[in-house]
Amino acid sequence: MKCPDCGHEEDKVVDSRPSSDGRSIRRRRECLSCQYRFTTYEYVEKGTLTVIKSDNRREPFDKYKLLYGLKLACNKRPVSLKEMEAIVGEIESVLISRFRNEVPSREIGEMVMEKLRETDEIAYVRFASVYRKFKDKAEFLEEMKKLLE
Image (cartoon, rainbow, N blue to C red; front, side):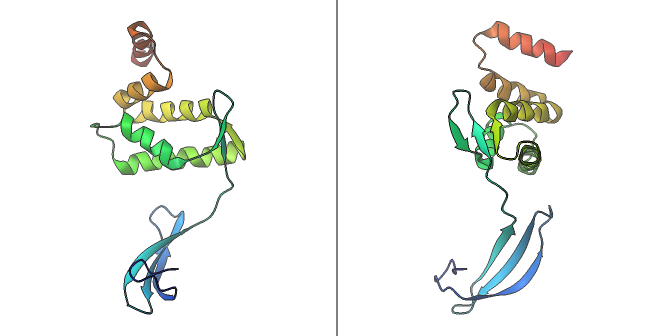
């Protein structure tokens, strides 16, 4: 591991423990050259998941892209970053266990909407309006009626 301060390639692990979510190992390291301390996280590398877009293009699954979409939907809403990260983690786990290699983008969108409906209805409507590409206010009102039922 290269030291982020001086670039030296030798360090020692000072402390090692599971992260709070149990999905990674948190390690405190100390550079043997400059004694700079830094933290690294070790994750199990999961198989690569490919997203099949609506136009049949394929691209690698990117959990950060999903998190960005959630942040936009939850902007100025009482949904914490930790909650959004938990949603992304849950969705990613389900996708990997259910689909293994390839997943249609609509499956991801539907899962996000389901989670947002449970978490924050305004964020749900925001996400749905972009995801479902409402063409006019009638379609938007129809979705609102479904939400109120």
